[in-house]
Image 1 (tube, helix red, strand yellow):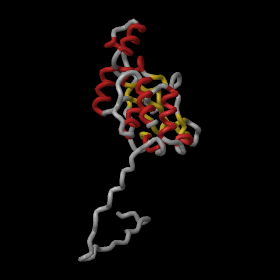
Image 2 (cartoon, rainbow, N blue to C red; image 1 turned 45 degrees about the horizontal axis):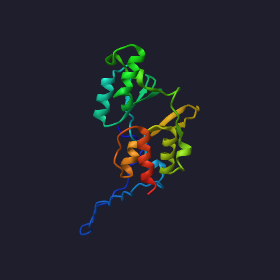
Image 3 (tube, one colour; image 1 turned 45 degrees about the vertical axis):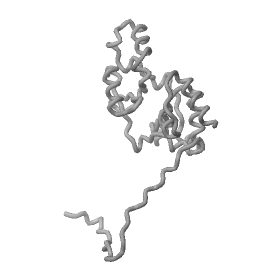
Image 4 (tube, helix red, strand yellow; image 1 turned 120 degrees about the horizontal axis):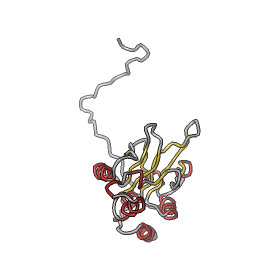
Length: 199
């Protein structure tokens, strides 16, 4: 039985002899340092963040990152509360080996919780109200000051809880600016990006 609260909408017919065109695609404007910061933020209201359990193995984390083509995963509990973030740098190379040595276990025994960046201890975030008027150059300067390739963006809900609404990734900013991703330590990457922006 149809819902009586909703009335059918008016219709029309395409007229013979009157052309009907496909819409023009909006021109994608190139990103530069003066573009709005929101243009390079991954918006979690539009893109579902990829998450993993803190008890998952590093092998599983690497497989998920490769499958989803991301360089980081968010760690959340059953109540969807953020616990931290894990990056490729934390799951590959010398860092997991150093953590395993410090814990006195084999590298194969490490889980995500051993190498993740804990949200309460180490994560500095940006607030959406500060990001909204900012420019891409401000984001790059902030990432450089933090010395990290990622920064989470939060807002507040009606109960004043933090709500994760996005993330800035240096890799995405490089891509949007037309720069080739750089290899090597993070300091070298920032140096390359900043010198490229100054030309």
